[in-house]
Structure formats: C-alpha cells, structure tokens
Image (cartoon, rainbow over all chains, first blue to last red; front, side, top):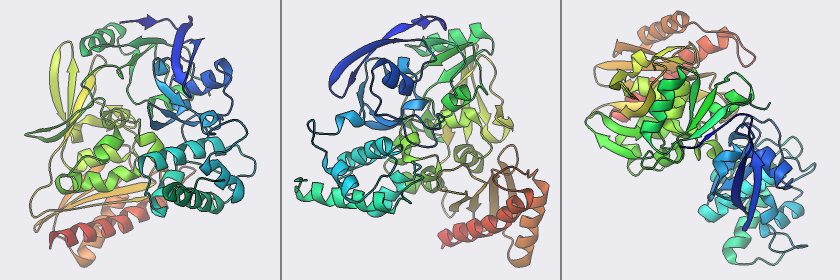
Length: 169
Length: 275
C-alpha cells in the first residue's frame, strides 16, 4: 500500500495519445495541470476547475472524463487521449474538427478542446447517436460564443460523413 | 482552485482502506469516482489529511441482486448502473432519475455510493434511496452494519457514517407490483443541481412523495390516495413544512411552488403507470 506524502513528488507515467509520458507530481496535483505543465500538452484547457464547464474534458481509458476532477496520481498507468491526438497527421484535421471549421462551431476556442473530446468519444461509442443524444452530451459543456447551434450542426455533419465513410475533408 | 496538500494512499484491498480510516480518526476521505470529492477539495471545503484512492481495488464495481434489492457496490459508476440491463423494469425510478445526475461526462466516473456519501441535499441518488426505502451498508474494522436510508441522511452533507466507516454498498429495493413510480426535477439547465426534485411512489391505496433540493435532507411523506383539492392541500402543507431557503438560484417561494407543482405532476404520472 503505497502512501505518498503531501510534500513529495512521485513519478507518474501514462500513455498520452499513443506515446509514453512521465513526470512527477505531488498528490494534490490535478491531471489537467499535469497535462499542461508537466507534459506540455496545453490543448486541454482549464476553465472552472470544479467539473462544470467541460473545457478540460479528455478521454481516460476510452471514457470521457474531466481532467480537473482527476488527480495526476490517479492516472498512473492509464491510457489518456487529448485533443492533440485527434488530427490524423500534422497539418490535417479530423472529420469532426474540419466540420467545426466549416460550420463556425467555435469562436474563441476555449471550450472547443473539451467538446471535441466528448463528441469524438460519443461517435466512437455510439456511431448512430441521434441529435437528442448529441445535445445530451453537449449539455456537459459551456460555450459562451456560439450559442451551441453551430456545434450541433457540425456534430451532425461530421457524424453523417463518418457513417458514410466520406472522410475527405 | 487547487486542493490543499494531502497524503495519498492507493489502496489495494478493502482491509487497507479500513486500516487507514481507523488510524486517521476522521481526517481521511475516500476517493472513488472523485466527481463530488474533487470539487470539494479544489474549493477547499474539504481539507483531509489523507485521501484514500479505492479505484484500484478489484471487484468493487459490481451490481448484485440480493433480498433487499439491487446492490450497488462502492466503486459502481453511475453510467454503469444507468446502462444496467432491465433497470427500467426493476427500478423505473432510478432509470428516470439517473439521467439527471450531473452530465454524461461526470456520470462516466462518478459512483453511486460516492453521491450517497456526499449527501448533497440536491442530489438525485440520495433522494431515490430514501424514496425507495433503500439502505446503506457500512463497513469498518469493527464490523458491518446496515442503516436505513431515511436514518442515514442527518443534515446538510452530513450522514450517519462514523469516522472509521466506509460505504460498502447501497441497496435499492426492486419495483413492487401494482405500484407506479415517477421522478421530476427542475433546474436552470439540465445537469445543474436541482432547485427541487420529486420522486413519487403510488399504489392503489397510498401515495409516497419524496422531495429533494428544498430541505437539508430528502423529505419523505406517506399519504392515502388523496385527490383533487385534498391533494393540493397536502402538497401545500408539505411545501410549508420543509425548510426552504433562498440562494442565488431560487428563493423560498419558488422552491415551495415547485414542491406543489412538481409534486402534483409526479404523483399524476406515477398514478398513470398503475393502469
């Protein structure tokens, strides 16, 4: 039973977007801060820091999760995916990201990383999710720019392209 | 918005958890899904000396069926229970209320027992546990005991759990025959904390109504099958009995009004399930 002292840092290792990463964290370090400050993965944004706004949403072990409601030490050995892992290759956007661009589904972009991770996970888990389900998932995110409608439209567009196999963007 | 420093124990067995709980004398908090504890830590409303992570203990995330109904063990996630086959048939109230617990993203991590342990007066799961006459199974080095849900919630975010105890499981009795169940909630946005929520359990002879979000703990009342103005009067009396408060989301008057209106809607809906 390892007990980690409050003042000491301990090694934390996990897989981030397919590659192993490691760093050191004291017990109270949030995973959101660890990703940004230790891993340099600043695509994940930190908004409210108590699980309400959704900006820090990532994927842990294939499941949507708020990285601000997870301790870095909890992530030891986990498989983690963030917005940096969505694009298929440098200079090219994923189908979902491209739909966001096409539909003006973002303005300032602060909330976007989290929303992309939630929708990407939804379409992996439930390729046939309907609009009600899409809106249900978006209910876990706050966006102060778009009024949400362009996000819904982008999601529906991306989903229909993913289902038809028309992934040319 | 960063937690105060704490020690961290990654428990590998239940015995280890109970050892630390006994040794720390109320200064330890259990981390399962973290969806209630982490906000409390970050807002520094909770400053435990040690956090015990139970997420690595095997076999803690089971749904079992026992004499006292569906048993949700300590690590069972809210999303897992929502997806449990047959839940709508065996536990229609839970199937109706679970989609109101937080968001898709928090239900994926948050646990049933964690929400019960946190005992937020607005939370749906404590309300359902009280409405269904469920119970809480507590374990410590001294042994096990069971507490009825109605006795477990003792005040605002306060429960009958003793310092050295952990919630091992909670049990939700199965739906009874010739009984209707309904759940209604009002919040500013779906996924927000409930300003008021109501669970109704109706038979041919009785009405049971439980109200969350208004008083410090879920309130449950049992009435005969009142109808018309007699039901309105009973709902109005209940609304005034509860210690409704003003906060930034709603004033007392709105909360009382929601007890009357949501109560009427939920009771009607539950009655319709009977036929």
